[in-house]
Image (cartoon, rainbow, N blue to C red):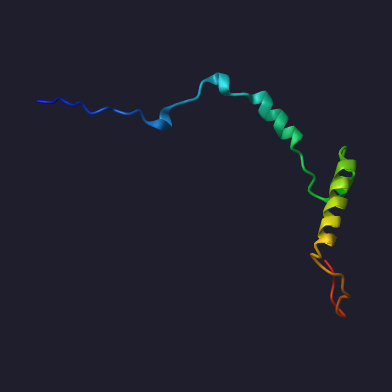
Length: 81
């Protein structure tokens, strides 16, 4: 007669990664390096303003080349965004 025992598995939610995998310094540095300005003013006045201006110019050129929009006059009484 074959005697099989059921294998008891560990609950995955109870497992913890070793402390050596917690790299708090790298996390903090990545948060600092990933700062993205939220407004145009913040972008053009930031330490990376040259790169932001180049990126904006490049994006505007692509939008123009792809004929993404065309300029038109606003209807009387309408406000532009």
